[in-house]
Image (cartoon, rainbow, N blue to C red; front, side, top):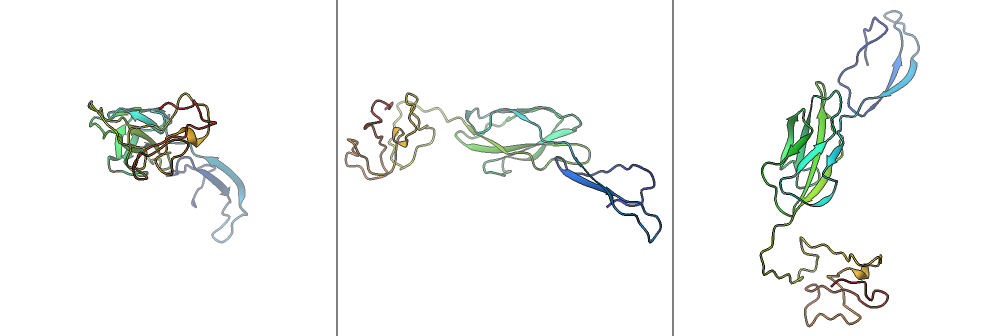
Length: 212
């Protein structure tokens, strides 16, 4: 509520970015008398959330010293970055002021095979964006030393493995490796306990659709 305006215009400060505001105006005829409200106009403040151009959101296998880049927004003074290992986390970088730049490179290597969540927020002289979308990436797996053996004995897909079959166009879950359940159609656990092996259904109609 703005009062005491004696001209036909006024400047409003401290508004939030990417927010719609509604405006009504009335005249004050005396200390006890005012006109009806007029207007009902609205406006939306500009966004202060830059568009991240790299890396792609939810990318897997990124470098442990990645560079995040974004498009500049006119009128902003700079940008802040927040990074964590959980959604909304701040344990890696907590609202760090980067200045008026359009990229950030991690100097200290991140952990291998780890999911990271981050936000880039813009700011100007009066406010900082708060509602920018959180993005994420997973770093590359560490290099394995040969010889290497994977037992598939945990009941889940091991880290740094991808459950896919590039030669198949089937949408059936049977063409993917399974880590629980009772194997069938010729697949046998060779005496191993349930949840300590991987198996795949190669029966009809999935015959020939597997890369094993």
